[in-house]
Image (cartoon, rainbow, N blue to C red):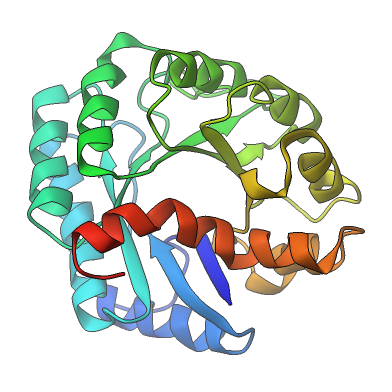
Length: 259
């Protein structure tokens, strides 16, 4: 079982969300990937207005409607527009088919504006996938670091949090969240590098490491290589490739009658 925690409609051929989702599934089928978590629209903005945020979520909703048995949706929110974000969370998760929350680079994730979003996500049993990155050239103005995600996790111990990209500078990122048991990391978004998966398993435990591809920005093949080529037991690979994500999503899937 392979479930991909991190996919986008951006960077994929197609004139509509449905066409792009069809392409993603065609590529995923070549690698035996059963489920894709999809978030953000066909074009992105770092600090989306409420209208743009809704547009992007509507595009994901269209993709989910076309392929309900292959895709899960995470609602894209902007903490700079808190009321609109809480409204989208209710529209797309409480009242719609989405099963998680996606936060990107609009505001640092240790900011208090995220607290109402995370509390509502906990009520809905929705995991929160937060982009975290450490760039040699410097982060974007609102771009979160792994240490900032650790701050958020300590404030919300009941939240289910996923640190996207393992922080990119993964040796720092893994250590930053090591003492936050409610934080898992996904492996996507950078080139395959020897040792990343092995370190994540050693420091966090295999149960806190999740496969993601970042398609269409990255290929399924290159990102699967981080897991399939890792020097870890087959039992750990099974957890990372799908069982961990399924476990994190199962509470909300059951609540929605999807599990």
